Length: 140
Image (tube, rainbow, N blue to C red; front, side):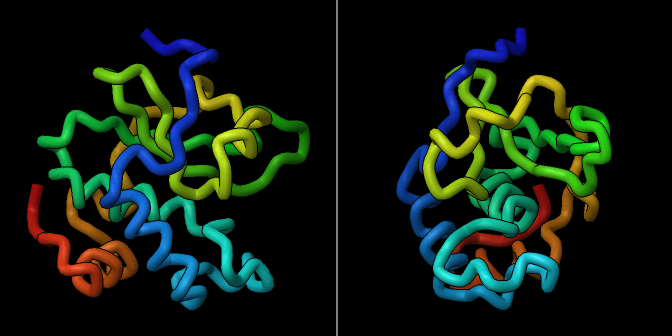
């Protein structure tokens, strides 16, 4: 059962920390509309969630993929926010935040559980992150 009060985690383990550090050091992973945020993970929610999902084993990881459309929750909202949920631990995993406190305004439970845009194959950005970090990439 989803709970609005489930905790937010930005670095659930060393793999997540490595992925986030790689993103900070490689701002070209960020879509152009998020330029100017170098040295942060802001604007990289999709690539980071996807890389972590596949690093943990993809469909076999037990993690659930979520996408929140801002238009669904805010008047005039635009864009999306991607994150994961670990139902076993009862936590939202949001690698695209600098700190968990930055997610207090995000209504995680209102997002939709779905597959990534590329389905169950890593995108080019996720594949690059995983390959450069030496984390296995493959079908899940």
